[in-house]
Length: 186
Image (cartoon, rainbow, N blue to C red; front, side, top):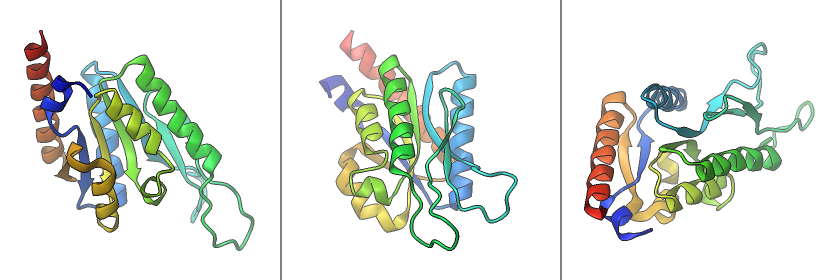
């Protein structure tokens, strides 16, 4: 990062304090609002992989730049209790975000920092690409992964309560800090 980006301060809103469903809805609403403002939004939010099936265990994410639903689980057969996360699907989702950031975006929304990311897999590269580009990131972090998150994001992260007013306040501060940094650089 250059000096002006460092002066901006924390660039990642780490949401916690609500259910997974509430946080995913908040992330989707945030992305939709930024898009309505004319901003370029990239990222992923959880999507219903099988809307017509009760008890479906398949996972998917929606690409916020294209609207595409990307399956991130694999069929392990009936009766399987193993993790069905599909590394190939997750890699494709990560690549979609990386490509969007390379084209230029104003904000990245990533569904969560989970166990895969804590192990430096999953969406880790999408986080790194966005951070490296100086793009603000909004994500969710489960309390059980707080220590892993702190090691991963360090001082680039702000803990934000998963409520619309708190996220709006964080976003306003980011926009103001970005404008100040741009003015200082000019």
